[in-house]
Amino acid sequence: MSQKEQFKQLRDRIDKIDDQLLGLLNERAGCALAIGAVKETTAGAVVYRPEREAQILRRVIKASAGPLTPTQVTGIYREIISACRSGEEKPKVAVLGPVGTYSEMAAVKHFGQEVAI
Image (cartoon, rainbow, N blue to C red; front, side, top):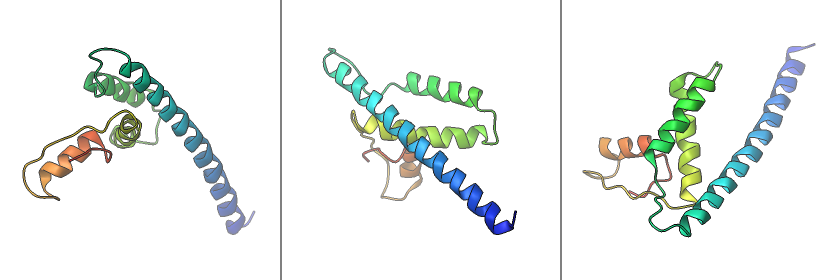
């Protein structure tokens, strides 16, 4: 098999995996929306549950067989959790200083891109 054919075969495989990932991410987001709907009917229910998010991160890091590092898995899942949580409610975070400062970067790193600053 030529190098060009190998690239095409591998890229086609990546495209199929991406399609599967997208389907699973949308399914996960749908579940998060359903959880949000249940929380709306529950008095005192809290959208942002840091202990639950920490539990998810610990579980997926432990389950990962590589080659992704724990840091990479954490970054990916922070964004997945952030995107899914935003269907319920975006966390509002106050930061010190103007846009682009370390405070803002730290908030985004912790809460993901779907945070209201």
